[in-house]
Length: 167
Image (tube, rainbow, N blue to C red; front, top):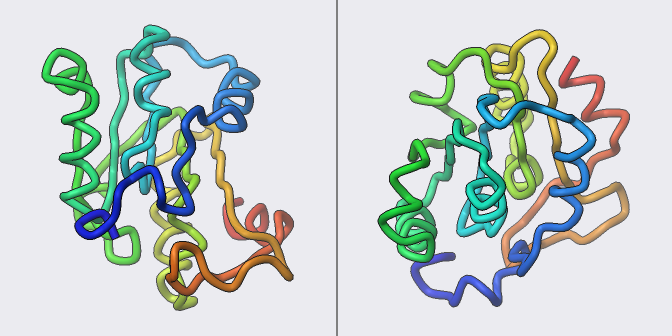
């Protein structure tokens, strides 16, 4: 999607990620807490985190193009402040090696994991890498919601189902 489209026209793009920022502020985590943004794409949340003094940020996306666009937008000075991982959360190689993540943030991955086995791997990885007293923020399409996002098939779910799988 990133190779053939302007980032700003993709269905998951937000100029300002206000819902994520509000949820993050409720977590009241330290500025050096490990933050993992999965499926980050070209999110502006990373700009917010850096500009607000967060120092332990890891970005994950399956798309190398998306990560390169985000690095380019941030510029060299800010992009060196972030750890970058290209990985597929349906079969993670690198993310599954992380530990003690304080905040797992996902605004654009779970609903693209169409197979139940991919979702099981996602939640297994989440449980493995997030520390016991950590936080998980997941945004997904609700039951009865859209069937596609930017032309791609998605899976709709409920908050109760997400909580059940995440615990």
